[in-house]
Length: 329
Image 1 (cartoon, rainbow, N blue to C red):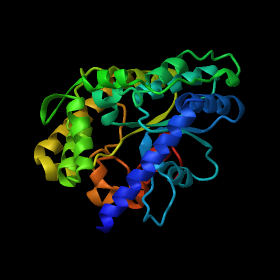
Image 2: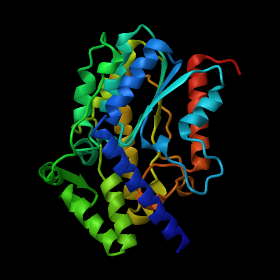
Image 3: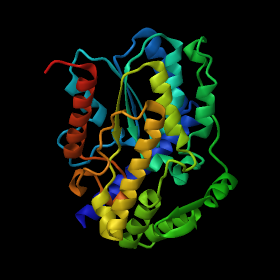
């Protein structure tokens, strides 16, 4: 009962946060706003480290004693002498990161880049989403005049129409449940939540979020390669890690095939990245190394880590940065 209440309260907070964000986006789009902030930082106070992150950076558990975000833990681990700029947000993914990295061409500064490889971010369920795909924002960011004033970096547009969502629901989305469409998941998941069928809801949510299979040839995987190539062409040192997946929970619902699919998708992400960065590019293999107890709420099928999980991942990233910079022990 207590766990269920906490889950309900967390979902309400997430919905409220999303509602507020949507209202703000109609005036000043979040993704474009982050581009403006990055460009300003590069010109006025260049960071030593640029951390590009997904939504995992934003969340802490209600019961966490350590309230620091993941990026704050990394910042603290690197010490006060390291200036770090963070660009993160809900469903930020490789294609959007590539758009942000183009902004580095506006100055000669080349910070060390921290970037995750996120399996969900290359699934059709996110790439084609009218909001979370960030397609309008990416177009706007890629059109930024790198010589113009930062005040010109703005974008705003209305919420997607019902017709756009219906088009999204028709997108083919094969997972371990079969060759279905996005709508075959979204609508039943909402109905299961409405009728209180929690076990079935969570099971279907895991298929929707993590049941797909990525290959190097999956449409959209070229964004990972392009991002890696841009980092290499810029000459930025880089630390790459895999966004952890709550594998234990998925295996409880779908058996070892869930773990096998996750491992295959992570290998594909690694391969796509190395196509752009080079065959010897180092990647922190963190995607399957976190226990169910290190996630905030395994029942929401997200990758959000609690304080124990965040501390462990932060330490991996900090050690990666230190090794990349050749810091003395």
